[in-house]
Image 1 (cartoon, rainbow, N blue to C red):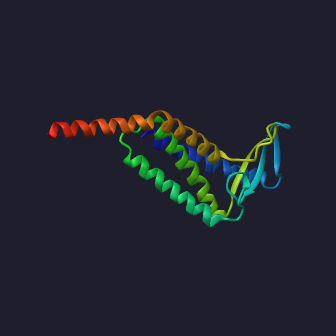
Image 2: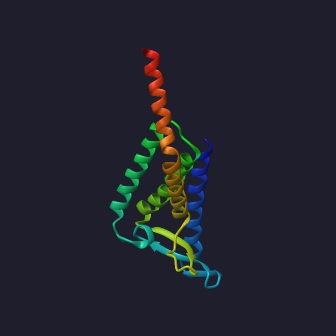
Image 3: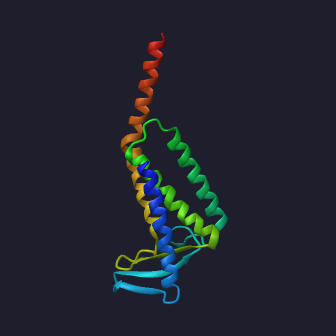
Length: 164
């Protein structure tokens, strides 16, 4: 249940911060928080990560729906749902949904977090959620996915042994 709450909170923070960026940054473009290091910069991103493949909205919406469906099916069918799987999918769902809602509604995603010290592309809360979620899934698949399979295999063998 906590993972649903985390997902809803991340989605709400994403939507609210994007609206704040629209309301406060559209006319001025960029505001330095720490000059030359971190700025709040208004960007309309019609592409995918870091502006790549601009103006391909239908592709991004379709891919988002497919990814969300595949993740949903995987989580539903997983026997042992560890913290990494739950957290990862929750964050990816909320981040993907936040960007997909905007892409459908506006044709672009609002990005506003601008770390200039590392010359990184401008991004938003949904992007952070997707990246952290992906990292959590990597941890799950590297360290725990085999444990889930072993547990399922062991239970199957035990069931078959008892039935003989």
